[in-house]
Length: 381
Ligand SMILES: *Cc1c(COP(=O)(O)O)cnc(C)c1O
Image (cartoon, rainbow, N blue to C red):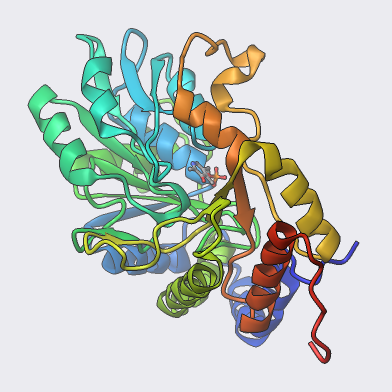
């Protein structure tokens, strides 16, 4: 079924930049610059400047940005790493892949790590914290960094959903030892396939991650300095992402405009709880990677079905909380807010390709669900 308002519109996204993208593909392929070449270095350098960081390392995924960060930081068996369950499963998987133990804490009303729960979760084995800046909004990094300093813990930021978002004027991914970003297609800066990037101001960590991403090889000398992985970002992809990076600020601006539109159109409904509007709180600059509303648990699945019937493609991320999947062995955690959110959340379409008319259509559809009255579909749209 073709939705009137698709959750993301990859064909439209592509068509809008087709000329530039194809010119880049032709140029890179024509030169045969495929692996670890200038275009990758250029993209890394542009991302580093965008974030004001010294080192950026292009990787195959956001998952490996997290994994190689933990490995480079020496996290391993016997260590504990604190993070949340209200996240994409990869955040927790990388801890397990290092041989360390994930310690999960609950989230607060804004879907991010509840900082009051971090200190009680710290033990003598705790080595690191992974804050997840979900939906394009940062965690309270003032509280988190104070805790990390006090207990001498490393901070690896899962900023996969927060490229360009800020807290106290400072961008996501620039607070911790490393900042980890995903360039997966649906992310605010997405490739035409998988990709990731990690940033740091620590030269040793940067060197270790560069080694780990390329089989532990130092290509200039032929030395192999450690057992590594194949976690490189493709050169062709880096070149395309570098073209897209020029549009990032305007895309983030557009996301915030759409969030403001949803806010105006839906804020008077008692039955849906909206995310904080753009600039509601001076400390936060949110980029709305996702626009996630909360419905009453008893309404949620009907609302989702109704919106889909209207032609609005909505998503429910994590309908089963990560710690409830039997196979993962994390059922012993009790995380009431995480469990509650799993029953309440609905992600509405929000991306730079979405038109005002489409956003209005989403608003009208949500409103008609709650008023019990189907709305008249306006002609010509
Ligand atoms: C997307 C995402 C990841 C993983 O990124 P990939 O590029 O898909 O490997 C990790 N954490 C969060 C919060 C994400 O949204």
